[in-house]
Image 1 (cartoon, rainbow, N blue to C red):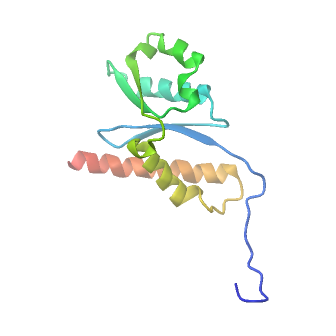
Image 2 (cartoon, rainbow, N blue to C red):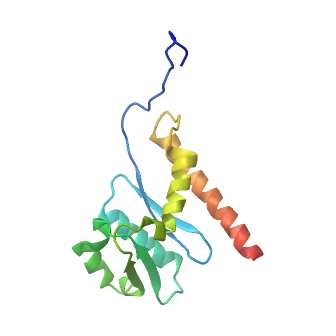
Image 3 (cartoon, helix red, strand yellow):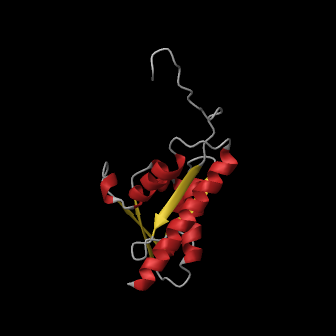
Length: 148
């Protein structure tokens, strides 16, 4: 800043938050995600349900996870005992290894390109931008994977 001039810094006001849980297809790079107001086992279970619906023909769906507590609750364990849940295989990464989880790069790209220092006036337009960014990302991945 120039001495004697004060720079205006826009702040979003209320500290509202939304959370995403997602899974990255290792073959195609497609990102499947769900949204929620809190980061809970329910959000994670919603993601697992979406995976079973998205990959209806798959006999087994392998999901690589970090060791976040919502991934290993009793609610999750009970859900994995259902018919749909038995198709899921959860693989936990060693603690403190975010570099080994490819989805972390997708989240970082989203944060760098959309949510960090955004100027949206509220959560609704911000989430619209988030969804648009992720859809465009998947569209580009789909076009690239069919060309290979």
